[in-house]
Length: 209
Image (tube, rainbow, N blue to C red; front, side, top):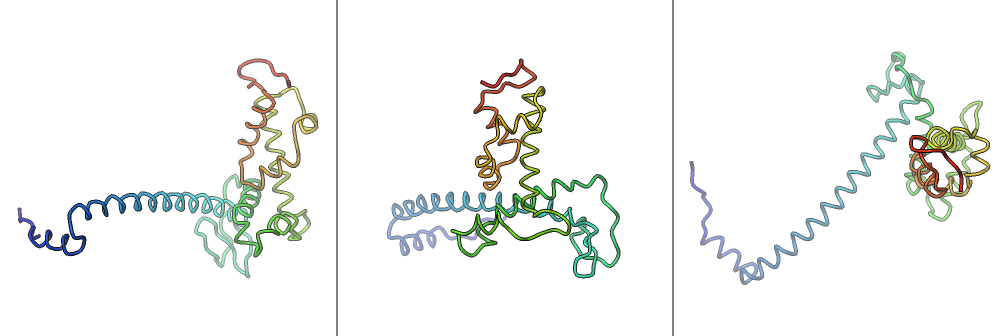
């Protein structure tokens, strides 16, 4: 095995020339290690945010699979515009795409709006309409609320219908805040069940206290 070509004397000379002493050199490395740990955490958080946004974008785009965009067809499998209409996807999750769109808009509020103080007004009272439908954002919010009620009905209160659950459990401002902040419908439903001390149907009978 070839021996190292590094000259120890040259290393000592370089350390002393730059830092003055090995003590200062070690102190510098201690500080640098702390800085690197902070940078690594920032990069990890950034990567997690990128992955989350990437997932939402991908799910939104599946809702446009096979649709014409600028005269071409969108193929979500290839993420490309193509000349011929792509093969339909098996079991497309259209409602999931709408929900993902609402989450994406909320996630990137600061990107899509110029002034922070008008973010909520501009984003959640959008005039953007899909042909023959209500606002995409309103549809996403309605689906979100429906999912919350369905989860509670399925897991906590099977003897109640959605209108009864809506009347007794749902605070529209809280659910709007939850939706705006990107909390999943399941997370909000579980927090609601905890607030009202609901017990899982898999454990015992249910009562609203």
